[in-house]
Image (cartoon, rainbow, N blue to C red; front, side, top):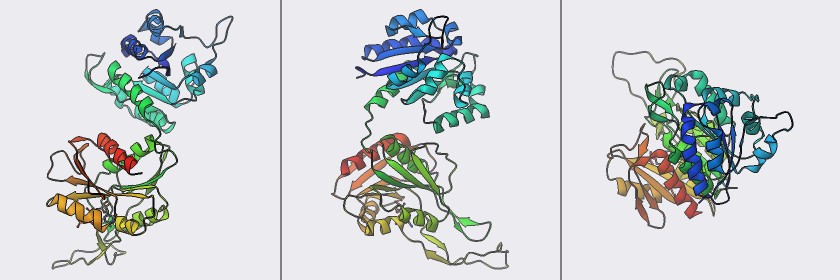
Length: 395
Ligand code: CTP
């Protein structure tokens, strides 16, 4: 699976370094070519001799000694991927700030290949705002972060911060090489989250959409090489992927305007929960409480999906969502047809673990050509992969 793949591994000073011999052995077994760089502190946790024996190549450590200079530029250019595992809090901070006081950091700064990191630290360090900021910076710089695990920590505490297990890191690396940029050159438009329709300066009509599904789809499309425009309603998720352009919107009308400006898409996925109605009049002052009942008059918003469906050109793939509480299949098929979508993703609020705010979802796909596929409950990231697989097939 990894035959001929060149993996440059950087090891920094964390107790989790003791797991690295197992990872190196597994990657070598799978056929990868390994080169290793260690920081000085890493040598206190795992022996360079063990790693170099398993990697079948010398471990590099010094930027230069009396007689020679280690060519970090060549190393960084040699690799197909650079993996930094474990990534300690200290090395993370230096990487996030462009520090360059050892060979590993110089190699990282010279690397022209993608960089994947597996952080490892104690829970309180992991949750410290400066650590989170440094992780965000690394993401912005294009690094992939392998999530930390939950469990026993070196301090004796139990919590978040453990480095992912060697098998998990190996699976990440394998998936990295397996992912082909099948959507390179394609333009994707994704909507996500709720819309807020103002009633007056302090009140609005909204819904419970968290935006997680739409953001996961945008990430997956970008991972496969598409250039993605994500039109997002008000959500608390941050997107740091440099391959995704995020356009913020609040109301259905703003969301519609952004979408129509980007109607030259190859793929459009309308995952947002767009308000169907908006107040006829928005009061410029806060509406004061009166004696009797209060009636709010609403008018229809423009249906973005249906309008894009009307204007769809040959070769464009348009995907809609339906969130239903009853007659799910019937309603989904109606929406597929009436909005001229090529694919409709149904989630039912009847399913436990599916719908708003959860990290999981269970969807059914309905195709224009009559096919129907039903999936199990999965994480929203996994569901995003299934949806993008279906889109790729339709293209
Ligand atoms: N949608 C849209 N613009 C709107 C309303 C909905 O683009 N003004 C899109 C949603 O993003 C979703 C699909 O239409 O992809 C279905 O949305 P949903 O609210 O379930 O369907 P509606 O057609 O509004 O029908 P109803 O609310 O009656 O179920």
